Image 1: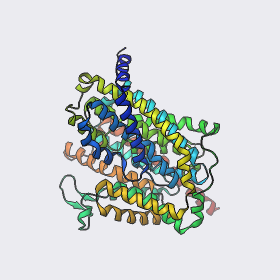
Image 2: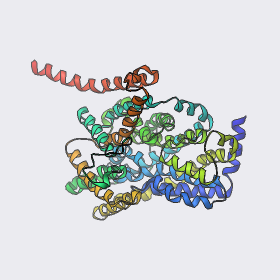
Image 3: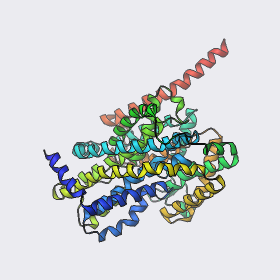
Image 4: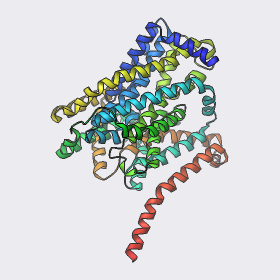
Length: 502
């Protein structure tokens, strides 16, 4: 009965006209910043945070800021699918198969799949947030430095499944991503690393510049070099909504993506990014036709989009129950709490029930508003494919450069776009997939920080990773995943050797 009474209180709060209005403003603004490459919800919320001080109700301010965050997860898939340029970091995985679907004239189906999967996952994950917040928060609290290190290792090993072809190349791309993540000042000593005396690199490599460069700019260079590949991008669109067979193929990935995202969203770090990568790897492993992935598999869109939206909802669990931010956006949300004179932590649920449950119920409303906003826009977005490429590619470059510059107000990041664009083009020409670079880049610093922290806690004893049950279990799963990834390649080489001997 407590749950129903709390939801009733939340519904009463969320349906107040000012909360409804700013929920709509938040999700619409979130969709816009998700579509525009490089801007993202973090920069947008940071810019709008001072404005929330003027709001009469803290609930209204938090509903709007939350709408920007999960709305950006919807919008980020649009440019990823249409022009292979992820509007949001978690949409980088969606670009792998979503853009291939667009090339085959199925852009409308891909966009509708992303919207439907996002709605279903977001709605279910919000229900998880309402029902299971306290126990899930306790699970997150059981993770120490050793467990986080093991979890990151598992994520990096699983990411091998993201790449087509050589496992060695996939491992090399992960290693490259980790190395790029180490550029900048050392967290513990403050000493610059791999900066080559360039002051602008002291703060590290910009994730936005890396993602935009290796995906968007590299794609533009490839299209300009090869007009035939450019022709594929603007092929005709057969329909705007998924068919019966598409819905049948979507069901499993959406369900699994929701579970993966709901679980990983509560963990500190890039939970929504890790969730989308993990969902893609899971679907590829479970597929009867893994060769379709990377060539326009609808499962490669439905799973990751469901996962990152579910993670966006459940990332509020540690914020609302413990006052712990699970990502930079949640850290800004804590700032919004403090601006409104509220101390984040376990007492918020008891002291401010209308605020907490009004925010939770507003997520149900916001997800419905996002579907109502995004599905009618599919036809408009698809018309982008008909734009002449001599108009489209300069527009993409301008938007990408402006968005990247706006994040850090650093002109050096725009130069990074060009450098990583050339790097991405070279890697594509060498048969390497750029997606694992992003995961290595995101998880590399977490890998290093948690390894060093665990070693400090254990006073330099590396056995701490094996003596802690949860850490040892995760490392065992990672080892098993690595073995299963390598075995098919070893078997193929063995078969070739025997054939040559015969």
